[in-house]
Amino acid sequence: MPPAWVPPTEIEQALLDFKLREDWAGYFDRLARERLYHEILRDRADADPSTTYSVFGHDPRVGGPVWAVYTVGMLPAPEPHRVFNINSLGWLADAWKPGRPAWIVVNPGSPCEAFLPAAPPHSGAWAQHHRPGRPLGGRHRLLTLRVGGPLQGSVAHGLACGALLCVSNGSVWNAMGWHGTGYINERRRLREWWGITTREEWQHYLRDLLACEQHSSVWDFVLGLRRTIARDFGGHVDPGYWRQAAANVLRAKSEGSVVVTQEGVTRTEPRPESEIEAQIEGVQRLIGRITRYEARMRADGVLGEGAYVSSVDAWDLGRASKMARWGLGARFGTLEEAEYAVVQAGRVASHSYRSWQDFSAGYVLGRCLHFDEEEFGDWYQDMVDAHRILMSDPGSPWLNLPFR
Image 1 (cartoon, one colour):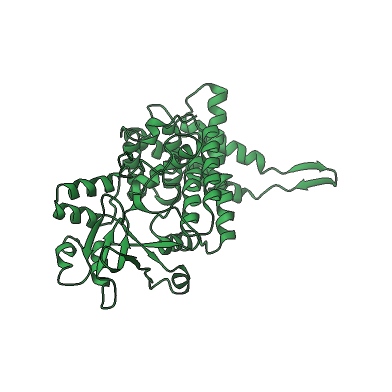
Image 2 (cartoon, rainbow, N blue to C red):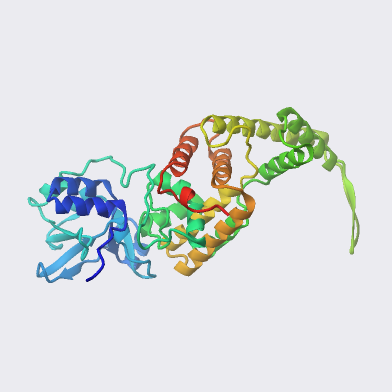
């Protein structure tokens, strides 16, 4: 007797439950809330990303062509020349025109499969469940692959380093075979946010992120100075003392020095006082920003009482975990390359932090220093919401995977 089918995610579970109850209104309504993936021709999409070229299949049960669409848990593993785009249920209704298949099949071959008539007026029965303007996939939810994605081990640990963004965006946290927001959108994301348009550029940014070299060295300077003071003096560091220590170090470094190397003696000249004072002012302003963010993070439960952020390496490592998958979704890299990078991100994180909460705080602070400008807006609040879910949901990888 074959084993019982396990729905890969809660999405397929819900569709199966609706189908078994013959609650087709519920089935269509849930379908309308989710990202629906359909295969497209990669070469045509590369030539003209503004237009998608769908791939149709054949199903003997309807005696002709069908348009197959998939929910996220039913997608096949990424292949170099087989790619998918995402759209909504409403888009599928609008996209039909004479000559296209008469049937749309949802998750073909699975127990939650359904055949939808593609052409009007019959398509109206399911198309009416589309709600224009509703975000696809939802946000601030923990979505897990029950089968087909790692739940334990080094790959799962590395994937969990990117879980804040996954929860915030409503994507599957443990999908190593990443399709994300679809091939066209994954390429657009890398191009618009990172300037990445080639495999070589993707590799360059991924290396920098894994080396924690994609954030400001000034952040490292001030946080490293506080760690040194805390180690030397046994704990709490007064912000005023921290500011003064930073000023003292910067002034000492500005006085010029003599460096002896195999090539000879090199003398560095003192820097202008006005330049040094401007640098000190900027560093002290940064220290003020950090202390205010940390105070808010303690109030919101991201940091423990009396705790502080040791480093913002997590900001790079969390993005490295996602960059590996973004590159796979955009077909700049292979599954093997992405998996190796994900494992590396987890390994470096386990050396840099003591716990998931410490890692989370470093990520949130780095993101806010980069984007938020002390507005405590979406750049901050989205991460707080994701942090709370990951620290409380019984299915969270942060509660089920040891950090070290």
